[in-house]
Image (cartoon, rainbow, N blue to C red; front, top):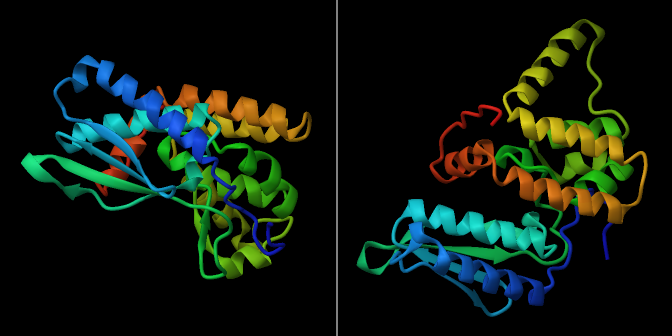
Length: 241
Protein backbone atom coordinates (compact mmCIF):
# COMPACT_ATOMS: atom_id res chain seq x y z
CA UNK A 1 0.00 0.00 0.00
CA UNK A 2 1.27 3.45 -0.83
CA UNK A 3 2.63 5.65 1.90
CA UNK A 4 1.06 9.08 2.32
CA UNK A 5 4.61 10.47 2.32
CA UNK A 6 5.50 9.20 -1.15
CA UNK A 7 4.64 11.14 -4.30
CA UNK A 8 5.99 8.58 -6.73
CA UNK A 9 5.18 4.99 -5.86
CA UNK A 10 6.77 2.23 -7.89
CA UNK A 11 3.94 -0.12 -8.84
CA UNK A 12 4.09 -3.88 -8.47
CA UNK A 13 5.62 -5.62 -11.46
CA UNK A 14 3.59 -8.36 -13.09
CA UNK A 15 6.27 -11.00 -13.67
CA UNK A 16 4.24 -12.78 -16.35
CA UNK A 17 4.15 -9.58 -18.39
CA UNK A 18 7.93 -9.25 -17.96
CA UNK A 19 8.33 -12.82 -19.23
CA UNK A 20 6.06 -12.05 -22.19
CA UNK A 21 8.10 -8.92 -23.00
CA UNK A 22 11.39 -10.84 -22.78
CA UNK A 23 10.01 -13.56 -25.07
CA UNK A 24 8.86 -11.00 -27.66
CA UNK A 25 12.11 -9.03 -27.41
CA UNK A 26 14.22 -12.19 -27.82
CA UNK A 27 12.33 -13.11 -30.99
CA UNK A 28 12.89 -9.65 -32.46
CA UNK A 29 16.59 -9.69 -31.50
CA UNK A 30 17.09 -13.03 -33.25
CA UNK A 31 15.21 -11.78 -36.34
CA UNK A 32 17.13 -8.49 -36.65
CA UNK A 33 19.79 -8.56 -39.38
CA UNK A 34 21.98 -6.02 -37.56
CA UNK A 35 22.06 -8.28 -34.48
CA UNK A 36 22.80 -11.47 -36.41
CA UNK A 37 25.68 -13.48 -34.88
CA UNK A 38 25.90 -10.94 -32.01
CA UNK A 39 25.21 -13.67 -29.42
CA UNK A 40 22.65 -11.37 -27.82
CA UNK A 41 20.60 -12.83 -24.97
CA UNK A 42 17.82 -11.63 -22.66
CA UNK A 43 17.13 -13.84 -19.66
CA UNK A 44 15.08 -13.55 -16.48
CA UNK A 45 16.95 -14.66 -13.35
CA UNK A 46 14.48 -15.54 -10.62
CA UNK A 47 11.75 -12.92 -10.38
CA UNK A 48 13.84 -9.83 -9.83
CA UNK A 49 16.69 -9.62 -12.38
CA UNK A 50 16.93 -9.39 -16.16
CA UNK A 51 20.31 -10.40 -17.59
CA UNK A 52 21.29 -8.99 -21.00
CA UNK A 53 24.36 -9.84 -23.06
CA UNK A 54 25.65 -8.98 -26.53
CA UNK A 55 28.76 -8.74 -28.68
CA UNK A 56 29.56 -5.12 -27.79
CA UNK A 57 28.05 -2.11 -26.02
CA UNK A 58 26.57 -0.74 -29.27
CA UNK A 59 24.60 -3.94 -29.90
CA UNK A 60 23.67 -4.15 -26.22
CA UNK A 61 22.08 -0.69 -26.49
CA UNK A 62 19.96 -1.97 -29.36
CA UNK A 63 18.90 -4.97 -27.27
CA UNK A 64 17.97 -2.70 -24.34
CA UNK A 65 15.91 -0.49 -26.65
CA UNK A 66 14.00 -3.47 -28.03
CA UNK A 67 13.32 -4.81 -24.52
CA UNK A 68 12.18 -1.38 -23.29
CA UNK A 69 9.68 -1.12 -26.14
CA UNK A 70 8.25 -4.56 -25.40
CA UNK A 71 7.99 -3.88 -21.65
CA UNK A 72 6.08 -0.64 -22.27
CA UNK A 73 3.69 -2.39 -24.66
CA UNK A 74 3.05 -5.04 -21.96
CA UNK A 75 2.24 -2.32 -19.42
CA UNK A 76 5.44 -2.62 -17.36
CA UNK A 77 6.59 0.81 -16.15
CA UNK A 78 10.17 1.73 -17.02
CA UNK A 79 10.54 3.30 -13.57
CA UNK A 80 10.51 -0.29 -12.20
CA UNK A 81 13.88 -0.88 -13.91
CA UNK A 82 17.18 -0.28 -12.14
CA UNK A 83 20.17 -0.64 -14.47
CA UNK A 84 23.40 -1.98 -13.01
CA UNK A 85 26.88 -1.25 -14.39
CA UNK A 86 27.91 -2.49 -17.82
CA UNK A 87 30.38 -5.37 -17.38
CA UNK A 88 32.79 -7.26 -19.64
CA UNK A 89 31.92 -10.89 -20.31
CA UNK A 90 33.59 -13.83 -22.03
CA UNK A 91 34.91 -13.63 -25.61
CA UNK A 92 35.07 -9.80 -25.53
CA UNK A 93 31.29 -9.54 -25.12
CA UNK A 94 29.45 -7.33 -22.62
CA UNK A 95 26.60 -7.87 -20.22
CA UNK A 96 24.31 -5.83 -18.01
CA UNK A 97 21.78 -6.64 -15.32
CA UNK A 98 18.47 -4.88 -14.76
CA UNK A 99 16.93 -5.17 -11.32
CA UNK A 100 13.12 -5.14 -11.10
CA UNK A 101 12.02 -2.80 -8.29
CA UNK A 102 8.93 -3.85 -6.39
CA UNK A 103 6.85 -1.92 -3.89
CA UNK A 104 7.74 1.37 -2.17
CA UNK A 105 11.14 2.97 -1.68
CA UNK A 106 12.46 3.76 1.83
CA UNK A 107 12.56 7.24 3.32
CA UNK A 108 16.23 7.44 2.27
CA UNK A 109 15.39 7.01 -1.40
CA UNK A 110 15.76 9.54 -4.19
CA UNK A 111 12.71 10.40 -6.28
CA UNK A 112 12.60 11.49 -9.92
CA UNK A 113 10.57 11.42 -13.11
CA UNK A 114 13.55 10.97 -15.45
CA UNK A 115 11.67 9.90 -18.58
CA UNK A 116 12.32 13.26 -20.24
CA UNK A 117 16.07 12.68 -19.90
CA UNK A 118 15.67 9.65 -22.16
CA UNK A 119 13.48 11.48 -24.68
CA UNK A 120 10.23 9.93 -23.37
CA UNK A 121 7.12 10.86 -21.42
CA UNK A 122 6.04 9.49 -18.04
CA UNK A 123 3.66 6.61 -17.64
CA UNK A 124 0.22 7.06 -16.03
CA UNK A 125 1.67 7.59 -12.52
CA UNK A 126 3.39 10.80 -13.56
CA UNK A 127 0.37 12.21 -15.38
CA UNK A 128 -2.43 11.17 -13.03
CA UNK A 129 -1.14 10.48 -9.50
CA UNK A 130 1.75 12.95 -9.32
CA UNK A 131 -0.28 16.13 -10.08
CA UNK A 132 -3.03 14.96 -7.73
CA UNK A 133 -0.59 14.70 -4.81
CA UNK A 134 1.91 17.54 -5.32
CA UNK A 135 -0.16 19.90 -7.46
CA UNK A 136 0.16 20.74 -11.17
CA UNK A 137 2.96 23.32 -10.74
CA UNK A 138 5.38 20.96 -8.96
CA UNK A 139 4.36 18.04 -11.18
CA UNK A 140 5.19 20.11 -14.27
CA UNK A 141 8.61 21.06 -12.88
CA UNK A 142 9.52 17.48 -12.00
CA UNK A 143 8.32 16.06 -15.32
CA UNK A 144 9.85 18.75 -17.56
CA UNK A 145 13.29 18.81 -15.87
CA UNK A 146 13.77 15.21 -14.71
CA UNK A 147 15.28 16.62 -11.48
CA UNK A 148 16.06 14.27 -8.58
CA UNK A 149 14.78 15.18 -5.09
CA UNK A 150 15.29 13.45 -1.75
CA UNK A 151 12.63 12.00 0.52
CA UNK A 152 12.52 15.03 2.82
CA UNK A 153 11.80 17.33 -0.10
CA UNK A 154 9.08 14.92 -1.20
CA UNK A 155 7.43 15.42 2.18
CA UNK A 156 7.50 19.18 1.91
CA UNK A 157 6.30 19.88 -1.65
CA UNK A 158 2.77 21.21 -2.17
CA UNK A 159 0.74 23.10 -4.76
CA UNK A 160 3.56 25.45 -5.86
CA UNK A 161 7.01 24.46 -6.97
CA UNK A 162 9.05 27.07 -5.07
CA UNK A 163 8.76 30.31 -3.09
CA UNK A 164 11.52 32.83 -3.77
CA UNK A 165 12.18 36.47 -2.79
CA UNK A 166 10.35 38.90 -5.06
CA UNK A 167 13.60 40.36 -6.41
CA UNK A 168 14.82 36.91 -7.48
CA UNK A 169 11.60 35.87 -9.21
CA UNK A 170 12.64 36.73 -12.76
CA UNK A 171 16.08 35.12 -12.41
CA UNK A 172 14.52 31.95 -10.97
CA UNK A 173 12.00 31.80 -13.81
CA UNK A 174 14.77 32.16 -16.38
CA UNK A 175 16.83 29.41 -14.71
CA UNK A 176 13.89 27.01 -14.74
CA UNK A 177 13.15 27.82 -18.39
CA UNK A 178 16.77 27.05 -19.29
CA UNK A 179 16.62 23.65 -17.57
CA UNK A 180 13.46 22.76 -19.48
CA UNK A 181 14.90 24.05 -22.77
CA UNK A 182 17.93 21.77 -22.35
CA UNK A 183 15.67 18.73 -22.79
CA UNK A 184 14.37 17.26 -26.08
CA UNK A 185 11.61 19.51 -27.51
CA UNK A 186 9.39 16.65 -28.74
CA UNK A 187 9.25 15.02 -25.31
CA UNK A 188 8.60 18.34 -23.52
CA UNK A 189 5.80 19.14 -25.97
CA UNK A 190 4.26 15.69 -25.41
CA UNK A 191 4.54 16.12 -21.62
CA UNK A 192 2.59 19.39 -21.86
CA UNK A 193 -0.10 17.60 -23.86
CA UNK A 194 -0.25 14.81 -21.28
CA UNK A 195 -0.57 17.22 -18.35
CA UNK A 196 -3.45 18.98 -20.08
CA UNK A 197 -5.21 15.65 -20.42
CA UNK A 198 -5.19 15.14 -16.65
CA UNK A 199 -7.89 17.81 -16.38
CA UNK A 200 -10.17 15.51 -18.37
CA UNK A 201 -10.61 11.78 -18.82
CA UNK A 202 -9.64 8.98 -16.44
CA UNK A 203 -6.43 7.10 -15.53
CA UNK A 204 -7.10 4.32 -18.07
CA UNK A 205 -7.40 6.81 -20.93
CA UNK A 206 -4.27 8.64 -19.77
CA UNK A 207 -2.42 5.32 -19.40
CA UNK A 208 -3.29 4.24 -22.94
CA UNK A 209 -2.17 7.61 -24.31
CA UNK A 210 1.07 7.48 -22.28
CA UNK A 211 2.01 3.99 -23.52
CA UNK A 212 1.30 4.93 -27.14
CA UNK A 213 3.32 8.15 -26.78
CA UNK A 214 6.25 6.40 -25.08
CA UNK A 215 6.34 3.85 -27.91
CA UNK A 216 6.29 6.65 -30.53
CA UNK A 217 9.03 8.63 -28.78
CA UNK A 218 11.18 5.49 -28.56
CA UNK A 219 11.56 5.76 -32.33
CA UNK A 220 13.09 9.27 -32.14
CA UNK A 221 16.73 10.29 -32.36
CA UNK A 222 16.36 12.18 -29.06
CA UNK A 223 15.48 8.95 -27.22
CA UNK A 224 18.48 7.15 -28.72
CA UNK A 225 20.69 10.08 -27.73
CA UNK A 226 19.23 10.12 -24.19
CA UNK A 227 20.02 6.41 -23.70
CA UNK A 228 23.46 6.69 -25.33
CA UNK A 229 24.50 9.74 -23.26
CA UNK A 230 23.39 7.99 -20.06
CA UNK A 231 25.35 4.82 -20.82
CA UNK A 232 28.39 6.82 -21.98
CA UNK A 233 28.16 9.19 -18.97
CA UNK A 234 28.22 12.40 -21.03
CA UNK A 235 25.99 15.42 -21.57
CA UNK A 236 23.25 14.76 -24.14
CA UNK A 237 22.80 16.71 -27.37
CA UNK A 238 19.11 16.81 -28.31
CA UNK A 239 17.95 17.91 -31.77
CA UNK A 240 14.14 17.67 -31.62
CA UNK A 241 14.06 14.73 -34.03
